[in-house]
Image 1 (cartoon, rainbow, N blue to C red):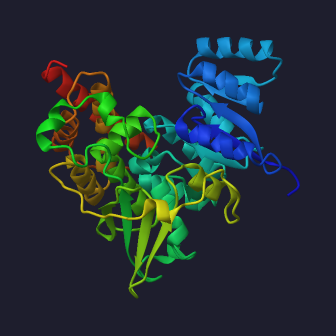
Image 2 (image 1 turned 120 degrees about the vertical axis):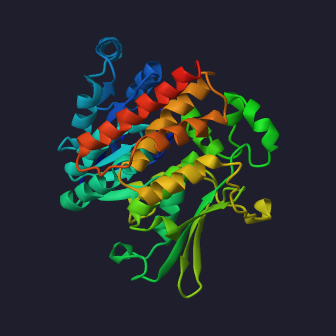
Image 3 (image 1 turned 90 degrees about the vertical axis):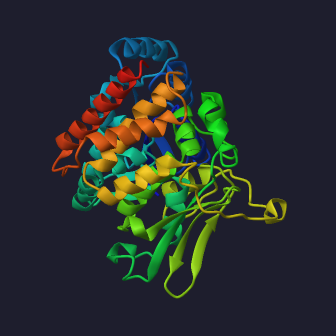
Length: 396
């Protein structure tokens, strides 16, 4: 290797971003940070810049950029601070960049991730919403540019590792019968249904196995996260929704499985630590140390599996329906969920009302084809408006 690979980390202060930087720091001869972005945790972003010395940092607002630039100069760094979506797209598509970790949560990550795709970068995709919102357009851009797309979600990375190398020829062609997408079941897997209406945001964010941000933790509790992953898996592996089955696996040791027509089922196992899929994607097709402890099967002792309960997890049902409908339905599902989860985290709605808001939005707006990115954002905006109207009608 003649020089270290230049890496842009979008969403550097989140859990995925921090795990990525941990893996990068373990291999300074292989990787170098080119750019970092942050949203609200600007003091943390400053500390990351001091440690990793990127050429660029990106923040959402001009005032924040000025403050960070002053702090960086005071620290003796020449890191340039850029602003907003334009800055994100610039550091995602810069000629010097070899790979982009796309870890901005939600719809905000779509444009910069697409900018990286169109520039032909190696994409480490942790922003599942990019594929959920614009699956066909996104994959068309990947094929057109020759960009290498590697999944970071532990489940999709596990599927990627268990698939034959030529899976793009079609699942049935390469002998794959179905994809088994595992889910922990979250903190409410065994909570009495009568108590779910009263659970708090802190309870919903207390995931039993994974350390994640608050929004994705709520999605995990409702299993909307798994629904979005099902949609993402269909695009990543050219699968039909009927070929992807969700399996609750409370230990979170088997990260997903691939079932072959000859009766073989391949599984990828590991401790629940995001550094494993990050290291896998960073070094692919090689393998590098991630810092994750070896899996101790004797300590785990047992592996359990169960089918998800639709009454307990209505968000999973709604996501499956959106996957079947296709076109604008997944984008609207995602937008309505973002509004509903934000309202729940703010204490404006109850936990069970998250699904109610999403179902209301999907019932009010017809599914339409998405011809371009403007149509994607139109569907996204419409769903957010309808979700806001639901909140207003109910005095929230």
